[in-house]
Length: 302
Image 1 (tube, rainbow, N blue to C red):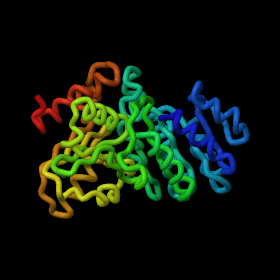
Image 2: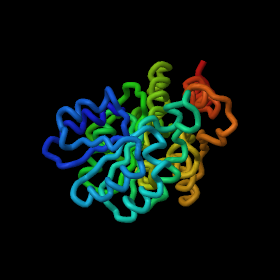
Image 3: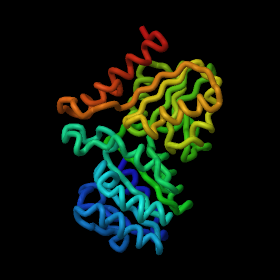
Image 4: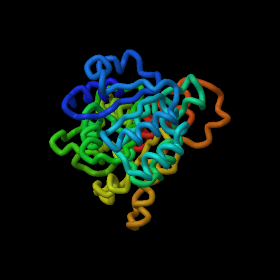
């Protein structure tokens, strides 16, 4: 996904912006650095300074701050809140490796509370794209709205695209749409591509609706007619607060909609033995195998 972001920014030759990195992203950001040297700045390993500096520059032009997972979010949360959000300036905070993306490096590199923390801040939009076109739409949305934005990218990606590109938006998009409206699966980022691959491999295209929640907000849920579904399953590679699951459950309660729901998200991970990303995902029911089993139980795959 990070390569897609850089590729998309290369299309904004006539847009004035500044892209800052915290001494990371090598072998990915070079095209941007080489083509737009005046739009690129390496601040070094100094995320708090990068956030505050971006807030100042953003008074003149849109800025991006780019770093690994929680380094661009939790490490400089105070600066994001006080300098970026409270002043409502156009800074796009980009984190690479959301969730367990850097699994083998352990909890210090996991980015699981980011949505909960940043999603509660004023004026800020949280975006978690699941495909190339959603990344492009997210960049377009940022430049058009010029508001504080958090762009959560996976360090890995599988090829999957939305079902209806003509109606592509930055809120919620169907990646698979059926006519029976019985089962709806909601997710975002890397997990959605995992679910998409299962649906394709097991030929579930006529059984399960798969929808990406790119913008983690109330509006994304409101845009879906979820009351028509018999069962809704949500998968979040994040803690519950601010997640798709939390927005879904609140919407159902507020609107007194009765339907069967099942939610999978990250719980207490502090005492889990070390492992790679898939190991951590498996512990919380978010691995390829565990997601397959959930879908199997739901529709009785033989």
